[in-house]
Image (cartoon, rainbow, N blue to C red; front, side, top):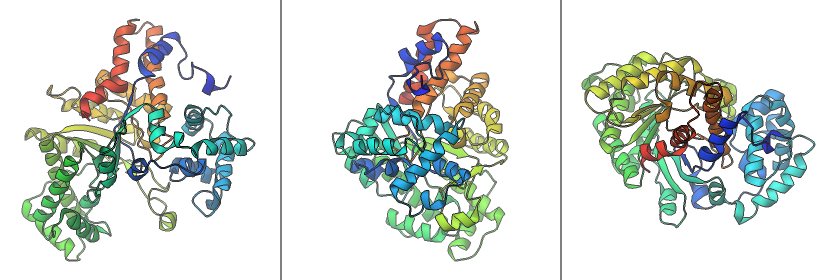
Length: 465
């Protein structure tokens, strides 16, 4: 029997299976952080074929194909959709022990009922069968989300975004709620090449001219208000590490003026500015009652040659080994001291930082909100069996996994939602193994409640979407 047809997949004992099938499997999904294109949901896009929905934009698959020696023509190049799919199908059997192997077959099974193991031999058969289904309204973007029991999907937008697609969907009778998170990183990274152009664009969105640091803060707050008025209650940042340098108002104002007049800023000046903007944003999130998320530790755009050819987010990023603890502690402590610390989720990309994050969140859980500061789920390179298990073990050992808000996809793919199933099976197995070993009581009702909370209830309460 193939693993995709085996109900005991990742659930090797009866306790794990009881927890999964009775308490986890049917919980709705609150996907509180992803990168799905909101226009495709608003327009209820119907994809022409499996390549377009499955391979376009998926740098996980691209990295695997490149490693196998597939020519870029059949990855991001001008190869036909059929050729690209065959190249991916040829790659799949070589992905064993990479999460792509499990994800690939779970997605084919859960969305399309395809139980065939994908390979070069079965490529054309699978491509035809699934593409025919995708070409029908039953498999439109909105119906794909409903098929996976998605209750809320939270996309990620820049402060300059008009949110017209969210507005369009909010005015419809679609059952799945689409909201957004505010991602202002471009307004922080003052040393980046396009910073001045971005500030002009931000000013246009805020309907004002940004000529000073005070103007930048005003513009950002206007856009936060705009997002808030359109239902957003979440912010997100993708940073190497938290910025928490000491600075004065005068210093930051001078640094901003220096940069917008075309002069270069030093590394030390950039850190002071980034610290000031990040703190202002965090204080504003608290004022609005938002949740702030920090995805920390990615070393991006390592391959300059390929980044020049293909641009960012095309598969040239990796885990970084940045120091995290001291600056993160300073940042959270400054906010907490002034009672301006919003609900916060911390994600690390380096697994060496698991225990740092698991203990850091406990420093600022003050009893005001259940799980106010969270150690976020395994992210990016860590959203696989070992990475998620290690994150949950660190959280269990050093905090309360019972307060955990659970899994998210962080994906650009409409076919990625079986990752919630993957997570839920692993979660149930952790508890099931310890029940079987006599380390936890066989109180299935109570432990089932904890499982249900992690899969759904905690996120429902925490985000209040």
